[in-house]
Length: 442
Image (cartoon, rainbow, N blue to C red; front, side, top):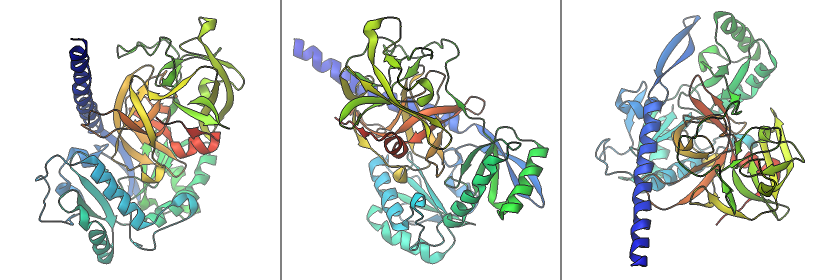
């Protein structure tokens, strides 16, 4: 009888997990389809426009401006069975390798010189690719032939190559030094085939000032999209009510990612994921939640027995990011609360605009969203719901609709824009490299 009850319990967890996944994705898509304002330079003036933030999830791709059809017409849009996200990601990975771009190390596409960027739609098994040259389209078709009937390619007419956009992005970094502009975001890897520039506030005066500096830097204004993006640390200024009835704010041993912790003098934050430094076990979190050398407690500082170790490394700077490593005195587990097992991580190079990612946080629990932008400083912007106290949350991926609990770490949550409803995490590559740690997996 005991084993029968255990079997029913496990089956219930798996079924609930599947429905939970579907709900998270649906909620993220609903949020992603809300309109967002942006500004483009047309006919000698900045013009305000509006469209759904994740437009390729919110409308038929045939209606997209610049749409040029599918690579595999015998498997037209809408006739798929539910696509397998693992296959879609592998196809996108093969295309990434074909393109041969690694902008952090100065590598640009020699195989596909007119390539202008890529993004995906996991729900419909689509890979969108900006290209200008028919020869490049033929190369992509050839490379993805083995995915015929499993994933489709939507070709969009690109105006700029990815190499052009990244070079302009490098030049545009000078804009961060112009205090009057208040630049908050810069990205060439997005769904627009344009350079995205985020300003804390957008006004006619700031747009005029931006025009002057773009001209001085030799960046064409027609290649730029301006958005209002005001990113802030996820600092807990009041005790936000937990939105999920999970015991993240109770003692959890061994330690795992996604649970509440506290450093004296700071409000509650979230533990990220376990990691070793010099072969010593510890756990990663956001830097602004800590002080170097300070003791850390889980779940809070109310009881000396909650002590879990000391903050050995803290980084909180525009150049290096927002992260910390706690050397623990208690056991750690390669898990994300409550039962996700960490199997590895995915480099920023294989994280794609359009991917659905999740985070597990102290305040809002498990929420999901869509990657909408990736900067070459390894900051990644999403539509995930977050709130103060979620700083330090692990951002991860598990295949949609699957009941198993294995996840890949994508990064560490640390900022949000409460007005626009977006959140930002730093890619796992940056966390591991800057902290000098290695991920603990199970």
